[in-house]
Amino acid sequence: MLGVRVDALDLAAAADRIECWIAAGTRSYVCHANVHGVMEARRDPDVRAAYDGAGLTVADGMPLVWLGRRAGHAGTGRVYGPDLMLELCARAARSGASSFYFGGAPGVAEALAAALSARFPGLRTAGTHSPAFGLDGRQVAPEAVAAINAARPDIVWVGLGCPRQELWMATHRATLEARVLIGVGAAFDFHTGRVAQAPRAMQAAGLEWLFRLVQEPRRLWHRYLVYNPMFVALLALEKLGLRRRASHTTAPAARAETTSDAEKPGGR
Image 1 (tube, rainbow, N blue to C red):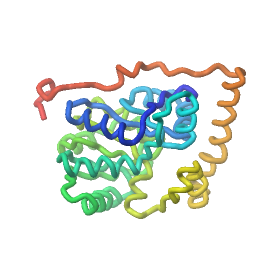
Image 2: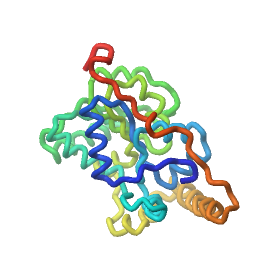
Image 3: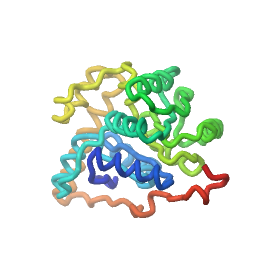
Image 4: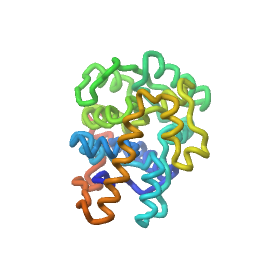
């Protein structure tokens, strides 16, 4: 979609894929794509490269779900970041996989870990870290890498917002030993009660953007009132043949690194 490859699967299939990575020792990361993310990728080659390098890029927004189905991928479902977090935490509580929470304002990562541990008894928390405000996802953060690797988590939940979290995961994937990095944005605030989620009916109707815009107009007006119309216009130009369809450059098979425990320096 406008040059960003989106995997045509639903939430259960995405969770199954990630569980397989953890079991097999595959080191990769997951991006959640919506209109905002696609438009950022179109504007910034580094963001597009981050999406291309992900092991999974899932449809987080309903417009991408509808477009995927119209393109013939009937199995495309919404893989909403907050819902994927709940699904994988429920599974991790049973399997013993551990989580590290990286992101949010000071204290939010700790509150999130406590909330999820209370909701899913047995869920293992490897650690938490709230980075400095305004963290640039392109900048290497050796102290964060050292802290996360020392905690030895299976999953690192990254809540920096789009596109910083996509850039951060792409920048740090090679140096982090955790199996999976998952960018979930506002899930940190939703699951700690800091920000209200849109009603499910509004989400299903593709109107979550309106709910969020009313909540935070000063922060989100450009994302929704500029990017949304631009997205529709660009798709229309492609459909009419007035704009060449963009294509991604990375083959899906090259987007996840499988490394056995024996091959890792020092093992796990």
